[in-house]
Length: 232
Length: 216
Image (cartoon, chains in turn brown, orange):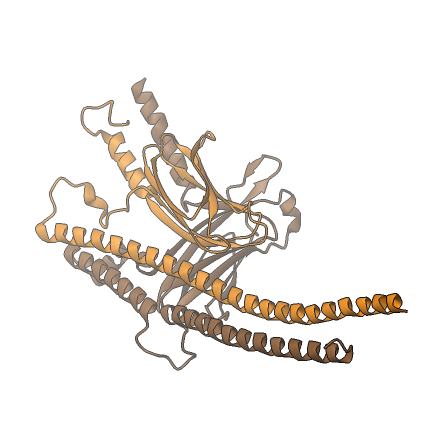
């Protein structure tokens, strides 16, 4: 019976594999919008794969695939400008490349015209987001450029090092761009701290002045009051 | 488990290895958790896979969140309340759907941004035929070790970036708090000093009337 148990375990694993083609999943309501943030340096490619399943009230389970179900994907760059805004089917793949470094926001919400289907109100979304060098498909690159094993490994290492360099540049900021300074992180951090320092300084000076002025006013007002009352 | 029955790795063993290699993946997601909300993520894991869940709170309130990881039968594998950062490694004891949830239900009005990295299995090798009998050449094994080292560099970079984001968020919080506090303090100071004067005046006006009555 050990053989039978083995077979069963492998079959279960096979079934799981067939279903988990996209790994991580979560549940979303009908009109709910889920946003994910990706903080990336510039010229970085991001690929997202998703698959949706609709909850079927009758069979009390998720249907394998539902045609006509759509997801609206919206990607905004750090300045709030929309980079990508498209409607995809129940299964889709979206790609974008960042042109400005910073926090990009990827928002997903379902956009189905057949609202009657949403009686159950639950949607299962499988999502997989790959960033930077994880987007490279090495077997494909090897086939296309006809690289040997060693050359492919060297290419992979080069891509990794490039990603590390980009991230470090993003963190530090060597060059100034023509747009507003302090767009990059460490500079922004420094500017925030300096602004706090300035505010504390101005506030203490202003506070002292206000104190002195109100003290003077108080004394003068009371003095004139007492003189009027003929107490002094 | 599957290799137990046979002396050497039989066909089932290789199939399992292939399956495990195929299901290996890492999901890194940063999402916003609204106040009084709970968000759960699910993943189907094959028995025997080594998994790691790592999370960090980037912005919001006291930078803490509740985290809970449950196995397929509902058994709680990991449960922590109000944690800022943690890393948890476990080996899947059963096949099934594992669920992990982040909860911000203790917070009344602060949104939190949470980052998590859920690694299932080891990274797939560059070449599918990695389980071959011949050993790697020196160059190839050097490349493999450089690749691993660079992966840990990228990992450290991610942590640094998150910590910096957290620090920056705290600095900006401090900045706005200082601004509001100084304005509030100035207003209170003015109100109190003017109020004191008028209060004193009111004391003396009452006394004046009583003394005149006594005098006459």
